[in-house]
Image (cartoon, rainbow, N blue to C red; front, side, top):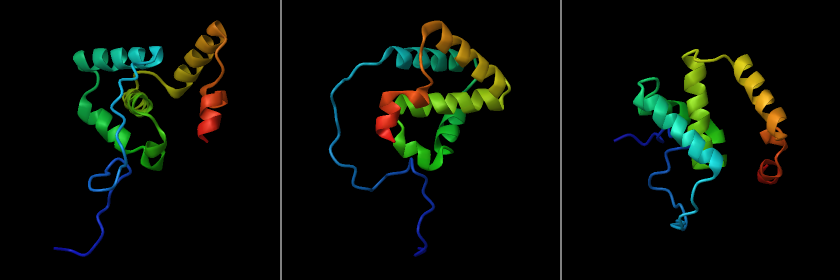
Length: 118
């Protein structure tokens, strides 16, 4: 057995003290339901698979610990779809800007929730 420390990613917290676990069902926000439906649909149609999404989530590095569950899975989905050239970064940014303008929604980095988390 080696004395060398394990090379663990931020997602691998096995054996670490994690504190209390909140078991309250907080429900899903609208965007979380939409993201979950998109992920399920893409998986059911063979466009993505859980292994790809897991790898992309694990590749988030230190960013992983600061994100909520659906933020992690949505980021992973975005990465995989970009890697597969389903759409380009430019197409995604243009569509996001179009939707924000249509619904008068600020950029997510301008969100008071994100600002508070930083």
